Amino acid sequence: MEKEIICLGCPNGCRLCVTERGRGDIEVLGQQCDRGIDYGREEFLEPKRIVTAVVRTDSDTVPFVPVKTDKPLVMDLIPKLIEELYRRETRLPVRAGDVLLEDFADTGVRVCFTRTIARA
Image 1 (tube, rainbow, N blue to C red):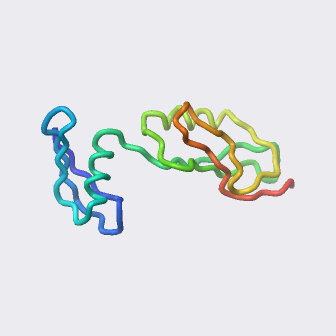
Image 2: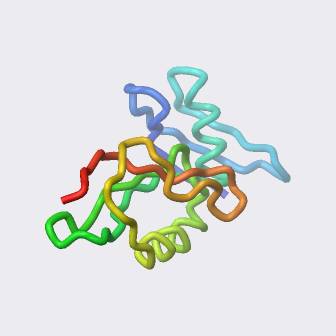
């Protein structure tokens, strides 16, 4: 199996060609730095993304507050996280960096507020 990927590991944006040669044997070509090899392997085997979203608040003047994961989450779990976040409502005030979810789905990924919002 072969996959073309644009590397986001550094500003170069290399076009990677990632090929699975056998069980766990992954070949990455086209990188200009070592980060491309790691990025290509991870993106091919188990892609992850930082998730940004909003959570409802108890305020009419500031109805939503932005949140973000503190590290990338496996893409298969992103819909479950979004569903969880959109079900929640938080009380104001909140501070940027405060944790909303400590360990989502036993992944070690935390969801934190990205903005300080005082009680309206």
